[in-house]
Image 1 (cartoon, rainbow, N blue to C red):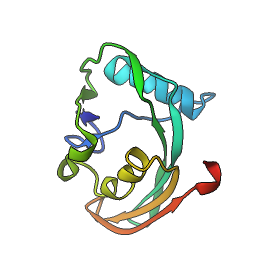
Image 2: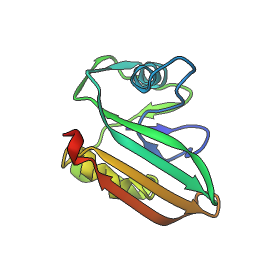
Image 3: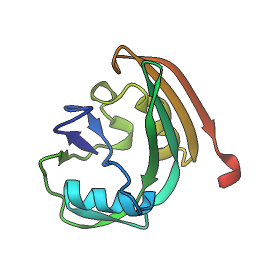
Length: 139
């Protein structure tokens, strides 16, 4: 995990991430973002699903979920992020986005591929609707 140091979610714990650049696949983006934000490259990242986010009635965007069991490089802090380690059964949900507690255990503990749709209001202050679907046919 990282502690986000700027932008949307500053001060929250989150996964490494960012925008997919033109001509880049989500897989290429996750590797690039890991290198840029914390100095490591994930080994064999696996796609585990996609999340759709709405804020105050407007589609904000989509987040592809990837997990990896290993990495190469030495984790380091950057302008954007401070890398942190937590046990899966001791994740600090009180310092994370409200939706994380609903979908993250499905991915990390149950190894499920998912599709999630989350609706917030009051400028990300309140989660008002959540939908999570297990993508069983994708194994």
